[in-house]
Image (cartoon, rainbow, N blue to C red; front, side, top):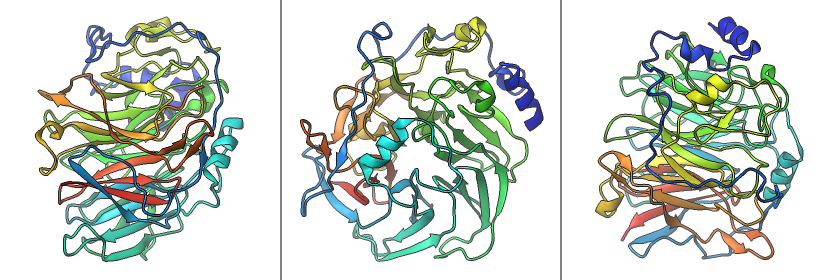
Length: 439
């Protein structure tokens, strides 16, 4: 299967793996979407100059926290970590946190943007481990913290299926024997599938999400470039959500043209797969909007040929693919250009006010390719009848310390919904995890 994908991509047919798959249930009518939950007026490309503006992380002063709406309290859940990124909450309530950053072995750094981001976050050597937190008495504070698994290579995605613990390193998915409640993995694991490593800016993250029945595992893989400036041969098996069996077999492209898909979750109302996607840079302040969307099986979302529907990208220098531009789906929800919207979690708890039920929290890591500061907060997207209303609300703010100086206290990443109905937010730049609970 992998050879077929390579041959297709080298021929420049980035979507062939989806289009020809017999399981892909779509046709021209439903792959040329004309409706979206949000009306988005896009400016012309290069209406504003592309800007580079990096933040300076200064850390949180003692006693200071991000700010949530008045119905909530914000508290420090954990600190003194090493770039906490993704959150996975097991069925028994155990909380797993992956720790990693861009400084890791075997990573190909492309462009000055990577260096700028590293400098702005004062990143050192990647921790390359997974932490376990356990709150045994339900008081909102952990009473067990341990290094659950170490010796990894830029881990991000975490998943548990039956008696297997899965980790998505930047270069492959590993699985380990696992029993609920254990506090450490000491036995060797096995790489069940290799993945293309590294990537432009922070496109090293590989997230995981299992199907509800545990029979499939979905892997998000970001592009290795901004708009394929290194050629499509550099993008083999990238800018996709891949689907595999739990043993690593049966790889296929579930959806394509997703420049940098990161956060993934299931809509509790209709069971659809949703993803947060970081869009391309260097077209101006207002292009291109990052987005959150339900992912159609076999769907094509434009990268690198088009963006946000059938808007052809003038910066793409490779062979034109008008047939793929025509097939490009319109995402469901624009969440702001250059916001670096990484985290995504549906709120399926029962402690927040009713309006939050089954809506999405989105962690916006913050901009570097914008003349103004955008992102650096967690936003909330309300849903009605299983679909986004199109209205975004600020939920967790206060990460920007001084806009004039470019100082920020931290940068939010992922969101996890806990068994007690509260949520956790990782703040990788300040090495903290925040807990938000209803009053």
